[in-house]
Length: 91
Image (cartoon, rainbow, N blue to C red; front, side, top):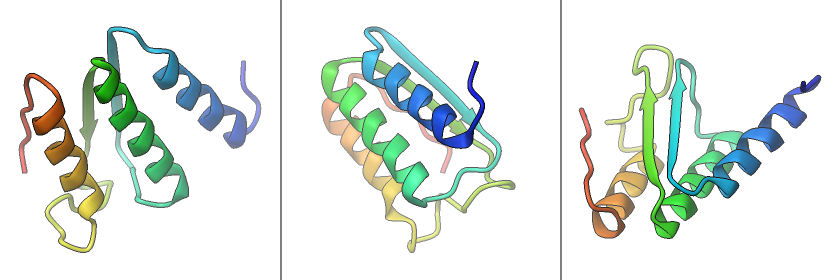
């Protein structure tokens, strides 16, 4: 049971950090703020450890992943292409 947004973020980061096989995340609203960047960093580290990562975001509720001012999503996909066995995106 978490009571604050900070506790929720820490719980998510720890679950990603401790994942051994898979991480599945789905967000309707995802922004590239400090929280979002922390999640993306942990996902990158999970990929590096060999964890299968599925990350689905809704383009209506979140930033536009095709927007060139938000390169962090492209960087995550590029990193996964180089370091993971399979990547599928719907950009």
